[in-house]
Image 1 (cartoon, rainbow, N blue to C red):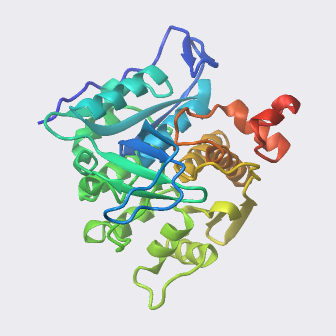
Image 2: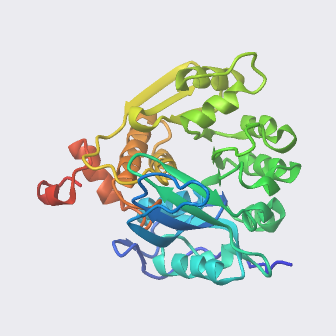
Length: 369
């Protein structure tokens, strides 16, 4: 019971404005990225001092309705950061209800993604996946509905993906999208990899605590990836599968994962510490960009992944610069409310990289953000 869509057509012979700042001129070469994963509507509750107990009420400072989902956030950020160099296509499912239509309207009006009304599948009679996010001064808690997310499957998109040429195919919110935990996804990724497509994944938190995917699917998926982008808790959980003792640090997780998958670049997002990475015997680490005013951690990891990928696609040989881009985008994200109310522009990231910090908005006169 899905409404299918034709394959997206490349943008040709016209000037295209991206995020109100970037111009795409006819004949300008662009790379194409497909992102497959979860689309949530976020009910963003800000200024929560403490989580409520059953039968009680707590005050908050704001409530907003925003497009979200780990993959949705990364897709929108990547489309905006790529500017005229990159077209981002987001493949997911939305419900045929008001939250689902709100999500689709927002993405169409925003214009950071290419043809979202054609790549997002509308599911009649299925409620849109939503996530209620309670954001405090240092962290957040969530409560989610997974109805449309659990219905994301490879079969909905594989024909279109195989009909096009891609610089990048990225999986986001993997543990949420249980419909992708099958052989069909592995076959699709093998076919894309054989064509030279870069494959990346951000796993997202595993609510089951198993860290292995349905039927151990992740064990078969990881060897196919060129880039793996977990946060520290996710990396430790995944690296601990099959080990006699739990993996406790980002360094241990990288050692374990690179030993099992030496050709995969493992990029671990470690919050305020920064980003650590490894591939085979190589290791890198960049510190987090300083932030004068922390506002909200929601979506920081998704943004970090987008920042890393945007730069990595430009120069895969320069891992440190890509890591610094990831750190800068993550820092910008935590300095603002919401996971991705408005996607970031590459100019904002370059300003942070030049200044070395994210400053309060009153300090932008010297060119810093």
